[in-house]
Image 1: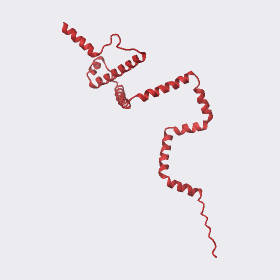
Image 2 (image 1 turned 180 degrees about the vertical axis):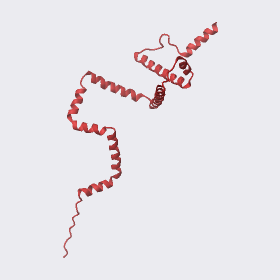
Image 3 (image 1 turned 120 degrees about the vertical axis):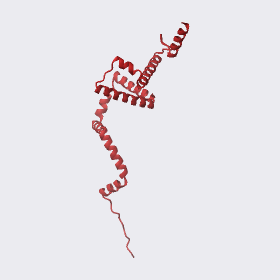
Image 4 (image 1 turned 90 degrees about the vertical axis):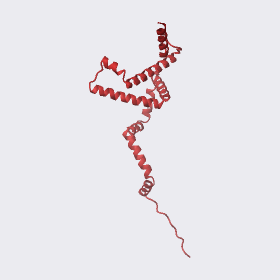
Length: 179
């Protein structure tokens, strides 16, 4: 009778297992290395290392920092700021951000060239369409800001001496007709 054959597969070495896993996960490894480089470049890894090394001491220190009225106020302010920022229209913020950037660059250019502005130049700038649009945006922002402040105080109606521009024009037209 024939003897039974026994086969015992060879156990892979640690190097073989790692090589096989590396070959199977090459794309994932490349992506994770790119992520790791970004985290390092932005200082996140350093912060995480400090966080892990500090352990419970960091948690205790954080809790001590958050004790008291000022910390409660800080947290409330952060939450309110977050709520306010979430209500802003991203397109409007983008438009205003680009406009602010262009304005800052123009201002820096004028400062670098030593340009000032006299009264005659200021009056001349009022004819410039870019200045007119910017002033319109600025005054619109101030008007909205003021309206929100009045609403927050519970103030209703128009304030004393406050009229809409079209009402003022109509009033002036009536005066001219009477003369």
